[in-house]
Length: 167
Ligand code: RP5
Image 1 (cartoon, rainbow, N blue to C red):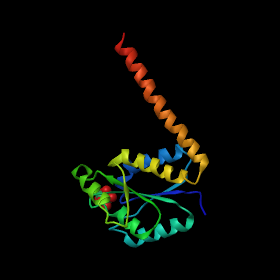
Image 2 (cartoon, rainbow, N blue to C red):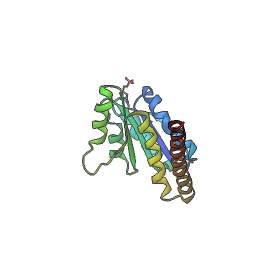
Image 3 (cartoon, helix red, strand yellow):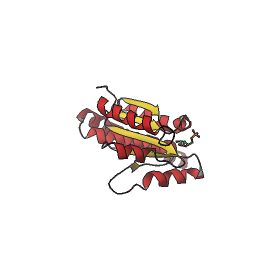
Image 4 (cartoon, rainbow, N blue to C red):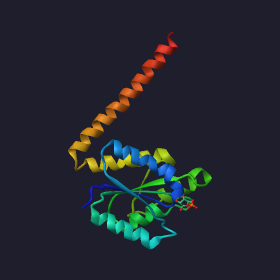
């Protein structure tokens, strides 16, 4: 068993500028992760064996980012019963091709699809944290605190705005 609760896969190293955004969120929440490049099309066998190894190492959530004909999340969801979160990458057509390929899964093989690119990678990590927090009360406490920080930051930025508008 490793302490990696989340595995982040991406179809190409060219996806890293988007997918690395997930790692910062996971680090901030104290969640162990691993990351690898595996392609549904270029390395199908290695993709499956990576998922098998992750399962046996105790990984609980799989995050998959891919662009163009983005089949990585779908292939991983076909191979594993772990929750799979798909991040469409903007490699062409503003990411619309990857968004549709990731989100339009056939019934029975779900992929929880988040936004395109870095925003999606961040939310993939936040969603993974929520899933993991169901069985981890300490993580749940950290998520409650993080949510309060987000609220406080918005209210503080509004207070600054109001101060500027009223000068
Ligand atoms: C997809 O094709 C990858 O996920 C990447 O977003 C896109 C282009 O890959 P590269 O040609 O940059 O390796 O499989």
